[in-house]
Image 1 (cartoon, rainbow, N blue to C red):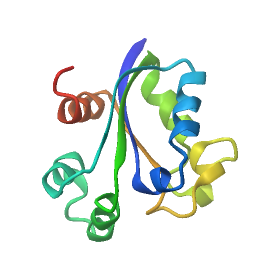
Image 2 (cartoon, rainbow, N blue to C red; image 1 turned 180 degrees about the vertical axis):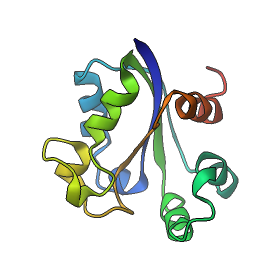
Image 3 (cartoon, one colour; image 1 turned 180 degrees about the horizontal axis):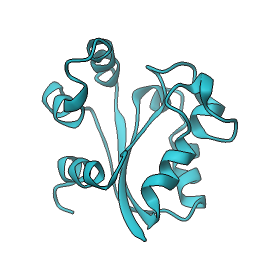
Length: 135
């Protein structure tokens, strides 16, 4: 089934100049970029995107990290896009991620795990609507 999903390439990947490599992996998997923008998230946008994490103890340091630099937001479309992107991203903790995945190849530890990918169709639709309301 053709799906849309959202990817956020986080500040650590942008600082390390991995944006092209990461985008290339999605494209090689057959995903089509339907929207892309470089931006700096602000506090309100961060809280809206990550609302289910607001009360967790890891949210304050995560918020500091995600606000620390520019991100690249990408709306992708393709066959089974949500699961394909999540598999390409690898396990949330890079120490557990399989070599060959983005996090397995380039990640250091959980807070700096390079990329965000929508976890399901409902989240993908919501996240795309937040960052790309024109879609």
